[in-house]
Amino acid sequence: MNEREKDQIKAERGRIIKKRVEDSKLVDPIVRVRFQNIEDPPAPGRPSPPLSFAFENYIFKESRNETEPDTALRHGNEYDLPLSVVNHLNDLKIPVYGHVIDPLTKALKTVVAGQQNRFACVQINMGNFKQVDSPGDVQLRRGRPKQETKEPAHEAA
Image 1 (cartoon, one colour):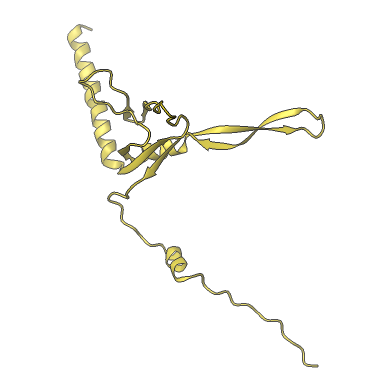
Image 2 (cartoon, rainbow, N blue to C red; image 1 turned 180 degrees about the vertical axis):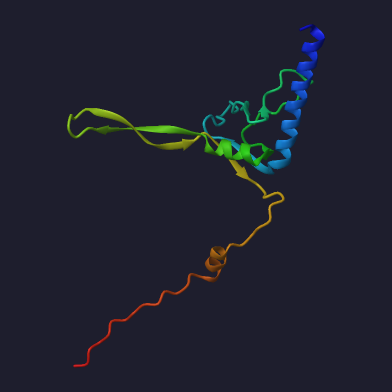
């Protein structure tokens, strides 16, 4: 394989990847969110570090020079993100450990006591979504349906 054929293969791969990204953007709705870095929040005199990552066909990274765009996520800023990326970031969690005494051996054991979110994407608007009322929502707005109660029958004395 000569250099020209290698360049053609690279160009074709680039076109395929670009098409996948364009197709996924058509399918995935865009949502406006405010990003919060719960794992490493800003402290007095120190900003929160930007978050760089890749998910599916999306790449978020800090720019190394002035020509490439800066797509890293920063704490407190608002972004238009695909819904799949928002769900991914909201699903990332860290285990929270606790200690329990084993009743049989009286030894101290480390157990997972819960989970804590690493990041939060708080939705600012619903974009092009249309609110659809489900029958359950309508009932909740009207009030819960009354349950019929049977009163005990009193016997005549």
